Length: 452
Ligand SMILES: *[C@@H]1O[C@H](CO)[C@@H](O)[C@H](O)[C@H]1NC(C)=O
Ligand SMILES: *[C@@H]1O[C@H](CO)[C@@H](O)[C@H](O)[C@H]1NC(C)=O
Ligand SMILES: *[C@@H]1O[C@H](CO)[C@@H](O)[C@H](O)[C@H]1NC(C)=O
Image (cartoon, rainbow, N blue to C red):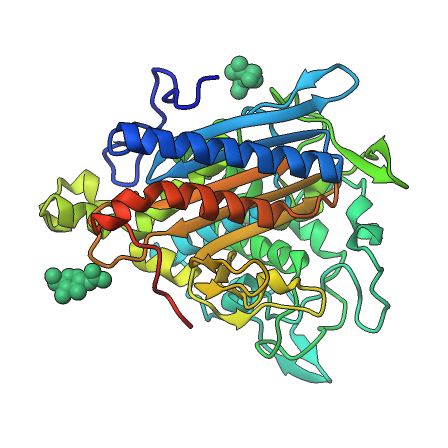
């Protein structure tokens, strides 16, 4: 088995500065000790993924890992399509569900940088046709920050006063087959419903909140959300990321499954045009890792400048423009509110929500007696698919490597797959972080810090 094949001969190009940086080269880790370490790490990760697949009865699983910008592992397990025996690989394209929110947050950050909106603006400033929001018969305002952090009071799939179904997948809004021609039409599903609480006071996860956000963004950009997304994919060089159009022919698109009384079934037809911004994208693990590394490098890009002993002004003008400023990524990854419900598993506590991402501080887990590093993540659950994308940035303030950090992503073509987060965290932590020990001792990489 070949463990460390570099990413073919062609390099995926990441351009955080106008000039392009190459993401997938290997250099730092290419010595005997580290290779041995990585082999151990990969065999442990393989065992963990196979156990997940077995226990949860997942037909197909894709997984990928980067360590300090190097693609160290990409693979698939099982089948993308059971009927035709198509293997699941790292190229398999699946519904990424709520990881779509991470993309939407990036678009919002870009608009803030361009001076088109402010985080705390009342959204009606840009979309005056929206009726005034009311809470207990008093007019209230809803801001971009609130929509991004799920603190707006906009409902999720259950109306105020209605009983929440035991499984979210029993919500009928998961199974809409309507094709909404534009985001405004999709607003009609929820926009007239009562706010659940006064904006800014509580955390209540809501995909519709992101749909509303995208409707306002359409007004600001004067472009359809679909077109905004497509140009983002192009800019970030994401060639296997799409809007989930049911009728489009998409290379390597997975089939999707669920289990009814343990029996494997194909999923019913759904149309995700009601939630492009909060759950409507398709991607594969390679693109998600490229996306994660771009954001990570934007955050840490000042290190690149430090390493090269450059100031941003000393770069040619076309290179001064990186995709996002460090301060913008910092804003997205700054905790806004504690993000837990009664159902949040103990392992995930405490956790916070920023703008489009969950944030988990460094902590010691009494469950598995492990010290967990600071990490940023998003999980997703769609009809027939489950996903996780996790980033553990380097927190050594003296580190000069802008790529420093670990990214892990897993996609499954089975609805309601449990233990995706645990598995991703395990892979990031127990395996690949161990493999960085030698770097750690050289003072180059230290995953500590960030306490709330
Ligand atoms: C862009 O602006 C024009 C003129 O106001 C309007 O007719 C059009 O619907 C807008 N397009 C989008 C996508 O908002
Ligand atoms: C589809 O997957 C196959 C098998 O992994 C791969 O060789 C091919 O390049 C993929 N096609 C696209 C367009 O990604
Ligand atoms: C960072 O570097 C400064 C100056 O050399 C040093 O005093 C400090 O202890 C270093 N911090 C860490 C976390 O390594």
